[in-house]
Image (cartoon, rainbow, N blue to C red; front, side):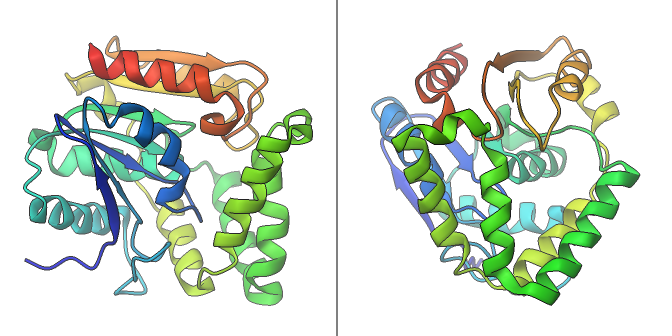
Length: 258
């Protein structure tokens, strides 16, 4: 069994796997990992193609990423875990839970979506690929991450610093990997029907001002299953782990303790 995934592990106890989002790295979970490592074994990987994890194939599905993650967890002798994913990480969490339901005890979707892309979103993915091919990663990153935050929050020094930090790491990514993920997200399966049959606890955290996942969509998804525990962060965009850090972390910790 081989895995090229790079990741960080800390703490002891029940396993909690934290998955970052699109064009991010495991570093987005540094603060949360420190918060919960006293009670849990916290595993934060770089998804293949991001951070220090290479991407071995050009054309792939999110199910392939789930398989790679499974190999990485097997090497660490993780047989059961709570898996929480931000945005793209939520899509991977869903793909993983579908393929390996026996390995997940709970799942968390952090500013993510159960639905597949609608036609408008699919078109946007294609346009983004074209933009990157024509203008490069620098131009893409300069516009992308800024829009993930609720604009008034960017006046806060801490939030501004986090924007600069994640943007700097994203500029190091290969456009081929970024474009491959855009295609994989565009072609992912809808999980609406599946979530209604999933019998384990689901955490859903949404931002009231999220431009990537509109709050109306998140509220609608929260009604798909009685197993979904839904929390809405006010005055928050797509990056609640920074924009409403204390509130978001408190929600996660209480969910893990249940």
